Length: 204
Ligand SMILES: Cc1cc2nc3c(=O)[nH]c(=O)nc-3n(C[C@H](O)[C@H](O)[C@H](O)COP(=O)(O)O)c2cc1C
Image (cartoon, rainbow, N blue to C red; front, side, top):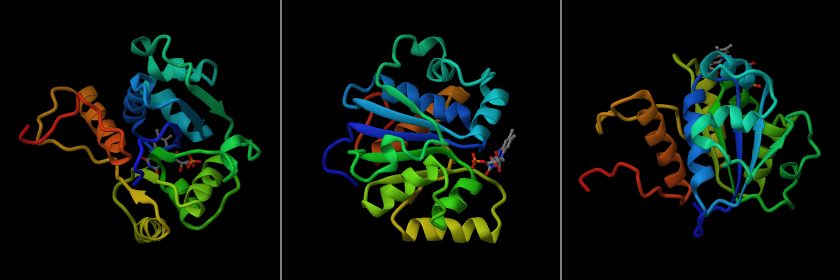
């Protein structure tokens, strides 16, 4: 993982369940002054799931809709990229992206990344992260897992990705779903060198 905290993040949302985790990830990076730029890409399926889980309505003001009232005014560092735009900045290794997180990561997106299918921007940006040896964190969510999913997780990990399943911890006794999702988002950020001061620490 990087020596310096990443300043330029790519965050992608795909059509797996877990929009609440994404929301807390975006809130944390919005508030983190070390993060200067976030290129955000959402697949069409991500929007479908977010409509169910966050009452999202369409793509307009997407970041504001996901962040909700607690993220008001925090969206200046976010740049939304269209998943269909394979000419967007993060499609090229020459663009100085520091790290990429796919949260949540569907097993469909996992399969495309693991097998080098780079037809849309999310998979292309992930492919670029791997070829440039930049951190790529895949927060895969599905249950139960079939052998194809397990093989694809192995393949992606073997190519350099971190498989960071959307599995929260319980030993700190989260008092709410929001607390659980927030702590999980903090763990992902800590993995990339962006430790959060408010995060729970075992035996602090
Ligand atoms: C409400 C809802 C929940 C879903 N949950 C999951 C899930 O947890 N994991 C998963 O891999 N796919 C899940 N899916 C299916 C994916 O959205 C679907 O396979 C989609 O094609 C993935 O597209 P994407 O990878 O381009 O985002 C869900 C779909 C819906 C509508």
